[in-house]
Length: 293
Ligand code: NAP
Picture 1 (cartoon, rainbow, N blue to C red):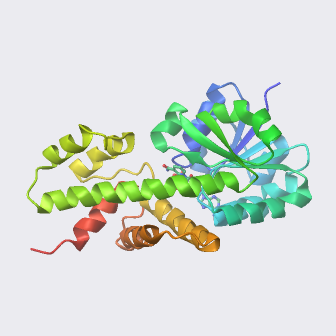
Picture 2: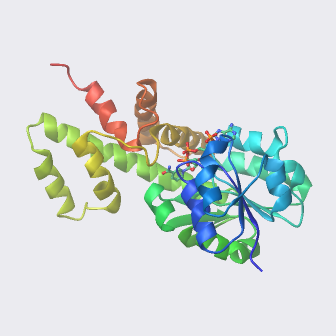
Picture 3: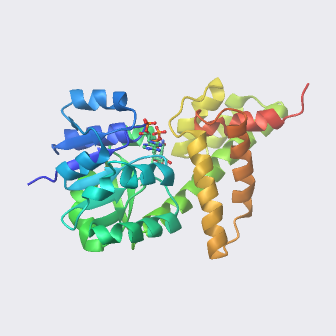
């Protein structure tokens, strides 16, 4: 019998992920703080819960895909929170990007409920969420992760088992550090090329013709070319993750000098009011720092 899935958080990522669970034949109930965002999924056959507790009561696998710790706290422990309906017969999967230390704290908070807890953040953005080709970075009891893999694979193409709860988030920190560095590096090179009088076309042709070519640069190049940044991965969310990355590195004693620098740059983007634009709007931050004519 297919698990009954409860899905909380219907943003850029959550909406297509819940839609893919429906497509895979799972009975899905949804909850979102702003209820209007649930309408398209209800049209596709999802049930609608009036609050997180009702969602957790009616389902056996509860998934959260929300901004971060504050949202998770509200959904789990706020009025009519899902936490009050979680029990040993249920599974709670957090797919939101949060720090490993927060994930371990969450595991401790959930322990008295008896629920099985899996942390399963994702690598991949809006398009892979739509295509069901996310890479799912799972932490928690290995047998339970294996048992739940069909559910996870309805949303992604691969599950990477990372270790105990918190290690999925650790993997997410590492992979997002690479995303942030590469995105800033790409934008920095294009900005330097422009100031140096090279055409953007020639610069991109050079990158794409050799070993530096990669999927992320291919996907983001159009934003930089058109100077428009429709949000696939909002810049404000990467800034949140960059803070988690430097905090995690500090706890571990790991040197991440460039992560500190990019945190400041992305934060400048948020301060400039570009937080709701795509992470590739880091290009606007560099342009903002250019000498003025
Ligand atoms: P999003 O479009 O901004 O959606 C955020 C979701 O969180 C919305 O459903 C929002 O509800 C909910 N939320 C925020 N604060 C809340 C609160 N206090 N109480 C209840 N719900 C709250 O974000 P997203 O891009 O889907 O990202 C979701 C998570 O996935 C984040 O952790 C992000 O870092 C991670 N992620 C994103 C991407 C990406 O490319 N976008 C890729 C990998 C991972 P409302 O609709 O009511 O605001």
